[in-house]
Length: 276
Length: 276
Image (cartoon, rainbow over all chains, first blue to last red; front, top):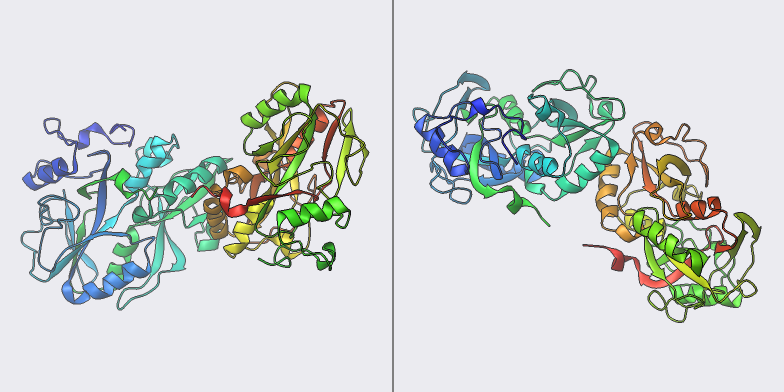
């Protein structure tokens, strides 16, 4: 798996810093050498979506994730106020080890800082949520092409009419990502992604976008549009944007997250997530 | 799993003969007490399609099956001239242990005898080929409804434009069976049937009938039509009618098979076929 195979411009990676491992990516982020997207970096390593919430909401959010494992597969949770997550990486400092962050107040994006040092609080809990980059690696290794990767685009994502199971203040529709495939590729993709339940697992829908409230595949709610060609069907996976969307909708007074595409690179290997 | 759940009329089974096991079904066939379909009998036991060919063609047919494992999953092969298949059942006499047979000469159906005693030859080789009844049991146990079962119909089957990999005299298109499902059921059905490679395994196609040369889902080439409702997609599995079709097309001078629906009930249990 090369960075190129994952559709990443070499320009994303500082030429003088090897970013072969999750630790490499975290240290480059920490030093400020790396900004922007982490796509294609540390190939083979699990990257995670982040949600960072005040402890008083953490229990609600944990229950939300438990009740919605396909869009919100938790791979790590910190202790309150502790910026490390030892279970998924050596010496993680969640305040600095991601290339960019977002800050929300009352559901509104108020800042996009390079680090969280000035925003950190002793009551914050970090949630690391599995990401489709892991299963996309498995699909590419099986020679299943991914159009958004080939075109250097973001995967198209759609709000559905499928409600998540609510918990406390957290509620809202599931967001899905879409990848067009031939029927045979779609069947193989179900088999492959079934093995990765902690990174969204098997598709949640296939073939009939209108049945989940998607009226125009060319108008994604997030990411970029990609074409669905004759002889292809759209295949939909639960998406890690779901928890971000739900957190924003809850208009909670303070929440932090990664910047789009700027994921937490962990020390876990993708193959470790496979169930069989 | 009840006979009713498998869509079988109680009238199929002689009321005074318990047909709980594969052996029961074989002995009832042998005695002449059982005629007609074996669907719903010996629940939990593997039933098999039969192809019985002269030894001089057996090598070609074996290679055909090896090259086309999805339509032709072999679960047992006899020694030439030997009417038993010890690997799949105690004391099988393939000449009598199926409720009905078909006899082909030069590719033409010439007889439908109740047994093969008058047709048996010392050069005949029996091929037992996995059958969708096994994976349908697994689907029903997962509460995935099967419309043809609910309606008491035969599964609709279609010749496709997908060529099998030829071997010797054997060549021709793959035949598929079709089951309409919701997208979520289709995804689950891929997962479940993937575990059963020796009974056709995962679907070969999903969602786009025209892509495999099927122009009208209401006009199956074999079996009965079932409706595909709004919110459903057609899911296609490789079908054990494929080898029958290929054998007929080869117009070989002499071939035997089971009568439609009158399968060989084995001593194997369906769960034994699961890969995981």
